[in-house]
Amino acid sequence: MTDLFSPISIRDLTLPNRIAVSPMCQYSSIDGFANDWHLVHLGSRAVGGAGLVFTEASAVLPEGRITPNDLGIWKDDHIAPLARIVDFLHGQGAHAAIQLAHAGRKASMQRPWEGERLLSPGEDGWTNVVALLDD
Image 1 (cartoon, rainbow, N blue to C red):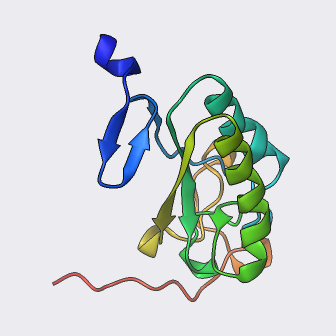
Image 2 (cartoon, rainbow, N blue to C red):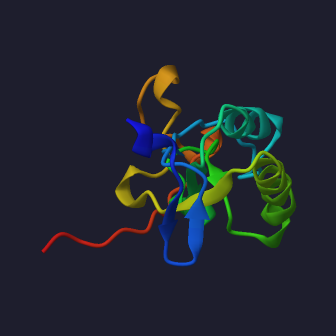
């Protein structure tokens, strides 16, 4: 149990402990932007002592989101809100990480707690979903 709280080095990165927060889909963004929800959600994990904190799955394309409420990193304007969170995490002694994501055929869905179904373009869904064909 004592190893949990001891530093660990992975290549050039040394984490203060072995506690890592896995990516969790929060479905709380508007147009892919991180907001106060993300700052509080991720920041509280750093305040609690986690050595590594991952953002939720962050879409690399708008049509690669699971839902219209997914976090994104497909445009430069997404950087500043994410940097605010990273600065806070670093200020608490934690390291920040990001899970890059593309939903493929699972894209353009409604948030799970609103009933799992495909959204139409009129409901902020999209039809230009990109996915590989099965062999």
